[in-house]
Length: 304
Ligand SMILES: [Zn+2]
Image (cartoon, rainbow, N blue to C red; front, top):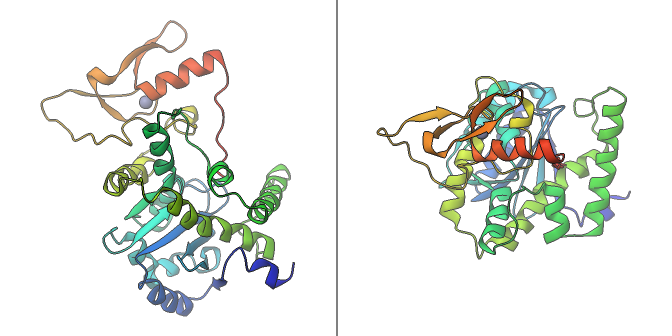
């Protein structure tokens, strides 16, 4: 593919793979009020790796930080401060920040903040227009629905095929260097598209409410000491208490949901049959998961 044909995907793509480059790039990024952020890694989470951190700007500039090569020194050189700054300094547009945030915190001691998560904005827009809002939409699906273009879709499809081939062959893809031009494009698309999605939702969105919900979302995985059973945290449902503010009330008794292990007011937990005649307390999201498993498989969410 000639470089001119890539230009509609983004304006400019830079690989940032030395500490000196991190310093100058962070300085440049500090002038932005909003950036988009995305991470790629093999099984991105504390249990996997974080290999590429991608930052996009409103002018469609894209920066790929090579974390495989630089490791923690990239964060020590300014990236940590940038990612930990509040939304009053710089909002970070993301789409499902949970795994990214978990990996950043537990692998690199970065407490991501100032996130505006467009996955929440999208589901909240469906809630407000009285559409079905049980299931979260993956980014791929959201782009198809709200901002479809052939070229981005081809780029994503191509990258996804390479990722799935690697999985099938038991190899990894994100830690291999040099990154192929196709994978660089794959990385870039999402950060560019987040700005187009924001445009779609910006007018109707309650920004303050969404920033607060994003604070709960960014903390959702990383605050686990150990993850619960997979089906109770890796699923396509919106976890309870993310969109709703839920200040702790010292006069009320809180209990753990036996599925997701999060704390809920006792009155909000349902007693559900949990197999083998056991009945236990579950939040409404986990109750839904149990009921679904009995009746039909849960649609798995594509995060690609
Ligand atoms: Zn639960």
